[in-house]
Figure 1: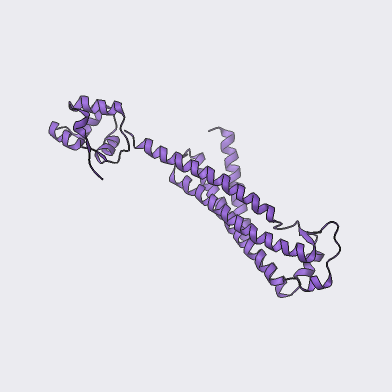
Figure 2: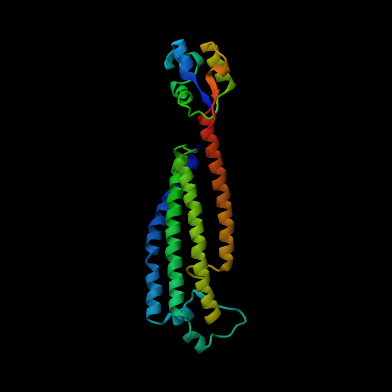
Amino acid sequence: MVKLTLNVVMAERNMSSQELAKAIGITPANLSILKTGKAKAIRFSTLGKICQVLNCQPGDILKYVDD
Amino acid sequence: MSKWLKFGIKTVVFFSYICIAIGYLVFLFPIGYLFEAFQNRTAHDILSSSDFLRLANNHQATLAAVKSFPNWPYALLMSVGIILMAWAGIKALKALIKLLNNIVAQEYFSASNEEALRTIFKMQLVTFVSDLFFASGNQLTRSWLLRVNHGASPQTWSDCVQDIYVIIFLAAIYETYRHAMRMKTENDLTV
């Protein structure tokens, strides 16, 4: 399954959830869904904004792990 | 939502509550059937009742047939049928009220709606079973006494077939709604 490692990248960039949510234009509740792994899907637009704000590649925040 | 639609839904909800109250009274009906069977006068009451029509091109039932009429099986079949029908009716109406109230509150996609639809579907299955009991009971009056029930609970085998169609319709609606709920959940969890 694909897991989001957003927490790790955010910690590396020293960025809080509030700041990131505001910067990419999503609600803190939605960011929480992403961070806790409850999300079923992520839009390309959201992924693009996260990468832009955190200055990273999609592969940096998405990891494939065996079930 | 338009004012008229809201008014219509609230009217249906009001009459549904009245039907539920009547539904609880229906639970008393089996007492009459059982009392008739106990007094051994079920066949006599059927023959003298205006609720039962004589079959066309048939003569009167013989005295032997009247005497051998299975009072207790008839009373039990009709009683079980009535209890199941009343139970299913009350549960289905309560689910319908919940569904309609959610529509008025504009909660179109909720777990409670899914639950209500599932209940209505299950209660239609119970209605099918109750109609089997009624059809069996009414078959007894037809075979023994040559009388067709057109009063209370006149269900025959063809009603059971109709029930199956309603079950299929409800199953299709329930399954479609369930799928829509899954899609909605997925959409809600897409960021």
